[in-house]
Amino acid sequence: MIYTLLFRLHQEAIKTKKEKFAVNNLEKLLKATFRISAKIGFHEMSLRDLCRETGLSMGGIYSCISSKDILAVMVKDVVKFITKDIIEKAILNEDPERAFQNIVRNLVYTTEILQPWFYFLYFETRSLSPKDQEDSKRIEILIIDSLRELLIRIDDRKNNENHYHIIATMVLAMIQERYLKPWKYKKGKYSIEAYASKTIQLAYSALR
Amino acid sequence: MIYTLLFRLHQEAIKTKKEKFAVNNLEKLLKATFRISAKIGFHEMSLRDLCRETGLSMGGIYSCISSKDILAVMVKDVVKFITKDIIEKAILNEDPERAFQNIVRNLVYTTEILQPWFYFLYFETRSLSPKDQEDSKRIEILIIDSLRELLIRIDDRKNNENHYHIIATMVLAMIQERYLKPWKYKKGKYSIEAYASKTIQLAYSALR
DNA sequence: GTCTATATTCGGATAGAC
DNA sequence: GTCTATCCGAATATAGAC
Image (cartoon, rainbow over all chains, first blue to last red):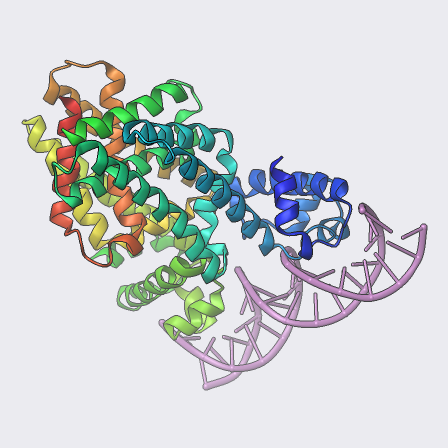
């Protein structure tokens, strides 16, 4: 489970040592953080807002996080872990087309399921320390580079370098578009499957 | 000039009545706001930061804005004014291809020149009141709808409705990608002309 | 029109009871 | 492990001198 992962990644900074308690509270805290910051932003959210939304007290909150800022770092860690996992498993595939489609589909599906996490990281990256901001950008660069490499292999270098880069950029922009603007897609005109297929199709038509 | 426009739009809320003084200070304030919030976010920026960066005092600041929040509203108003202007002038063109290219190029160029304004509005929309947030979303919907209409006319409805919508979405995502991630494009590998052309080319290849 | 000084509220964080 | 009560600094905004 995702909150267990989180507890283990940040264990040394968490006062509550019993995993069961900490994990339970972390889940409450992060879910409330997503709800509140999606509306007003992370920095505008006060810990008292968080108390109200979680039912925890100030003391309760500080028993499983060391500071407010660490919440944003936790989100970054989860997004990084999951994204790397998707890419590393996909590129094990020897067929570049399958690997490419695998990455796109998995990212579209995963960012749908974990929309609040990815949305939060995108909009609150500036709440992170410079070092963690760099880390966050590296996730994006990893995606672009992986997609670009695969596109080159798929197309057998028939176009110039820049062309593959811009297609990779376009694909990532489409993936982000979907999870960054839920207000556009809530009405359900586009299924997530259709969206992923369209994105792959756009990339292929650009190769030609 | 853009700051004169701003002064006239918000005149009733500005204490300083001499246009020359107010416009001068508004320029200082907004430029400083862009510098600081690009790094740490609008909400984390304090008015004391703004004092330091502009050389103005607290009193000086409050002489030409009624509150901190109004700065974000001003940005929204400018972005709205300029975007509507670009689109309205472009669609006067009878040839849908020329109109389409006109919108894309003008948006790419304008968002490059006014990058801090567009960037700020995108990331700080949540600092606005619900009503102003709606207003901000309407700008985006206007762009998508205009592009989609033109694509339909260019292609003469050879594809289904959804296809045009997704291409319009992709084009906007590409335009935003450029001004939202300056750290990717600062190195100057892509000229702004090349970027605009590539974007148009991607849209055309998707039509086929 | 712009400054300094100050009022007031609210934020994150902690200490100690239970 | 969780709560209540409290500290302290920082934020926005204003009042009144120049």
